[in-house]
Length: 312
Length: 312
Image (cartoon, rainbow over all chains, first blue to last red; front, side, top):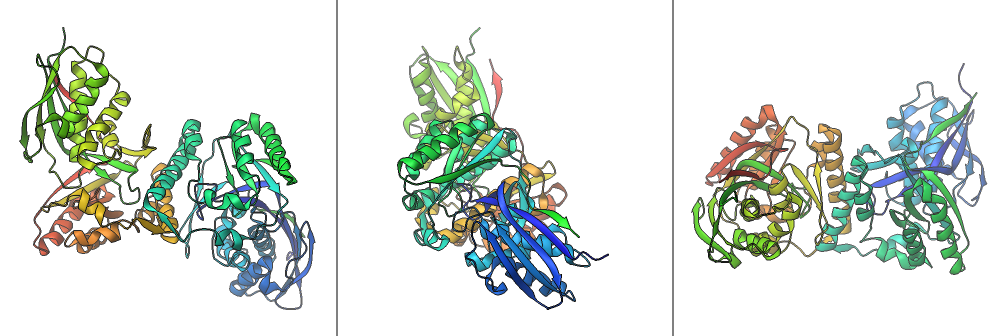
C-alpha cells in the first residue's frame, strides 16, 4: 500500500571544519530538524506548520528551504499528488549549525518515501542543495552532504559534486557551543576579503592537506598541528564576542583544534572523548565571562546522517 | 674501521604535483644526482668536481647546494676531518625536476656515512633543506623531502616541517617530459600574482583535498577529476611553448592529470601503467610540433628516495 505520511530527521552540521572553507562539513547528530511529509490532493508543495526553536521562517514553499527542496524533487519525480510539510526546527537559524541544510535534507528524505519509486540518497542530494540555496544564496553541498550522508564529508565540484566520506579517528568527539547571538551568514560572508595572499593560501592548504592525511592515518599529532584556520577565522573572529578566549580555553583544555562552525557564531572543538566534558565546560564559562549565554552539546564526528523516522 | 669514502644517489622530484603548490612533491627515480663524499685532512667542505649533464655550477661550498647542505651537517656534527665532494649531475638545472634538492640530499646522505655517529634520515632533512635554499632562495621541503624519503610526500610547516608520506595507487606511473628550455625558478615565481581570489582558492583546495582523498582511497575517478591545478598552471603555462597542446595530448591519451613539474618547464602526467608509453610518445610529439626537442622518462610514483651506493 502506498505510504501516506513519512517523517525524517536530519542532523545539524559543522561546515568548513576550520580548514575546509566551503568544501568540508561533518554531521553533528546531537541536534537536528524533523520534517513530516503527507500526501494531499492539492497539487504542489505546502508548508502546514513550522514549530520548534525557530518558527519565524517563510511558509511559502518557494521561499522555504524545505519547501524548495521538495519542489525540486517533485519537479523531477512528477507525482500525481501534492505534498504537505510540517517542519519541526531543532536547530536555531543563524547559528552556523546548518539549520537550512537540515530542513532541506529532512524534507526530501521524508517526501521521497511518498514517491512510487523513491530515489537513492545520492539522487536526493541535488534537490536538497536546491532547497538550501534559498537560504544561503548559493549552491553549496558542504552542509547538505553531511546532513544527508553523515560523517565528515568532502565535496569536490559544484554542478555535479563528487562526495567523499573521510574517515575520522574513532576516539574523537566534537564539542559544539552555540552562543545566543544571531549572525546572518550574509554578514559573515561580507567581512571576508575577496582575495587571499599566495603565502597564506599555501599555509592554509598545508593545514587542509595535513588535516585530511591525519584523518586517514589516525595521526592525532598531525591533526593537532593542522586543524588551524589561518585564513577565514582571523577575519570572522571579531564578529563573535569572546571567541579568542573561548578558543584559548578549549585548547588549554586539551582540544585538538577549535574554530568557527560554518559562518558562526557557533564554535566547535575537536577533542578526544575523555576530555569533551571538561572542554565544553571551559568554553561555556569563557563565553559567559563575556556575558554571552550559550548552549553546548557533544557528539561523535563520524555519526549518522539523515534517517526516516516513520512511514505509514 | 671508519668509512673514508661514501657515495649516494638522490632521485629527481616532481614538485607541487599540480594541486599542492609548495607542499606536495614526489620522487621520480628514473633520474637523479650522485655525490661521493671523502674524508680529507683539510677542514671544511670542498667541491672537487662537478660532472654530468650540468657542470656550470658554483664550486664554492657556500654557494653550492650540496656543499651548503654538508656545511650545515658538519656544523652540527663537528667531525675532526674535512669532507671533499664529487658531484655527478644527472638532473639538468632549471628543468623543474628538483636538481638542487637531489644534490643537497645525495650530499648529506653520503657525508653522513663518514660520521662516527650517523644521523637518521629525519635528522638529515633540515641540513638538506639548508642546502637547497642556496639555489631556491627559500627553505622549502617540497622537493627535498621526497628526494630523501621517496614516494609522494606532503610537507606541513616550514621551521619544523611535519613530513607525511601519502599512499599512491600502485597501478599508477608518472610520465615526465623535459623540454630543452631553461626556465629559472625565479622567473617562474615572478609571473605569479601575489594574491588569489577566494573563489579560485576554494576551487583549488577542493581539488587538493579530492586528490589526497583519492590517493588514500584508491579512487581513480576522483583522482582524474581532482588532479587539476586551476591556480598556478594557468599563470605559468605561457612560459612553456606548446604546453597546452602537450597537456591536451596527454589527457586525450588517457592521462589522469597533467601539469607543470615544480616551476617548470618539465611537464608531468599521471596515468595507469599500461598507457604510460603511449602518453609519453604523444607528449613528446606535441612538443616537437612546437620545435621544442625533449627527453622523457617513466617511473613509479611511490618509488624509492635517496640511497647509499657505496661505502669503503
